[in-house]
Image 1 (cartoon, rainbow, N blue to C red):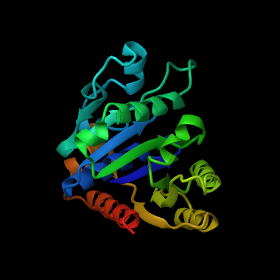
Image 2 (image 1 turned 45 degrees about the vertical axis):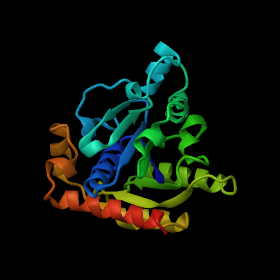
Image 3 (image 1 turned 90 degrees about the vertical axis):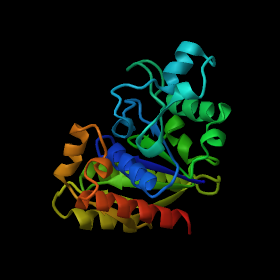
Image 4 (image 1 turned 120 degrees about the horizontal axis):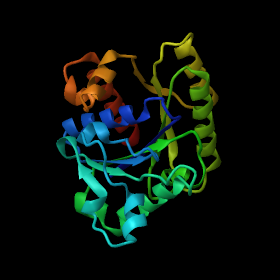
Length: 251
């Protein structure tokens, strides 16, 4: 089983990227599980098309442990297993708690044994890397972490902080850094700035995604680019990225 976590600051296109990677992998015949670790609980929406799904934190809050594995997940595009950790009411409670609850309950309810995924992808908000937000990096969860950034200063700052956290966890059996994914915003000197970041953290850019109208067009349809526009250049970029991630994880 390949287990990866994808981190990046809010609004960087992380969930869109992860969902397209999941769809590309599913097209290749892999059994995929995507776990959304963002309080907004919208990581998997383009895979299953449902406006609202019940989050694990909602189930724990409302039913304690009196719920089934099927209550926790939704089956999306080509069998992708979709899970949303969820988060507390704004201003009340810890958002990281949803991630911890989700990962614990998936194990307790036997999700990995029942669905036997080839690839598990954790989609994690990376504005902060503490408490529950660092949970997917811990031993037994992700093996590799990939960081999404653009050339915008705040995105690069967040990516550097995530890389620093990974470095600080070295020696504890936590996930290692797999590389940087550049999601272009077409800002000045973008590639040079992200290459400098990669060099500073002793990593590399393992994939580059163009800024494309196809992304918004697909989201308007409630689908991934891979599903909505499979013959587009943008879909090819997501497929190429998915293959690069597999190559890195299989080394």
